Image 1: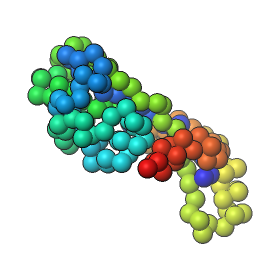
Image 2 (image 1 turned 30 degrees about the horizontal axis):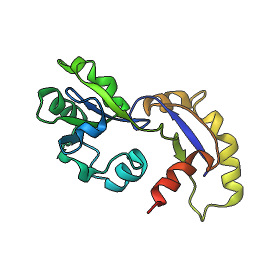
Image 3 (image 1 turned 180 degrees about the horizontal axis):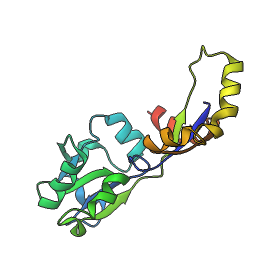
Length: 170
């Protein structure tokens, strides 16, 4: 672990189960759940849900686009939806989106990691870590902004341990 990136937009910082007609995630169980995140079942169940639900608790309606997920729950084609924070922000911009509300939210995910491969030279990692804070300054500011990165900074693995532990849980 070398560092972390503070990103703007893009989603993945926090996840939500939303619905028009249900008050909590328990009342969504056994119903349809639209999501574009179902392709990574272990991540959804171990890291996002952390025991609150499994995908098998629902009839999953797999979507391929983030807005498609939102439209499924707005139209009633799905009773509930598993979405991320970027989708939640977009919900208010869609006709009928105001009728949809959060019934469950995940823990906040750690920032995007910056890593080095195991065979990278220690001295190179050390100098790269030290330079991270300057990457998004000066001439690098435009490139960082284009990628949605606000800043880069040094870090260790500590912020990611809760996700690593959740992922490793049996």
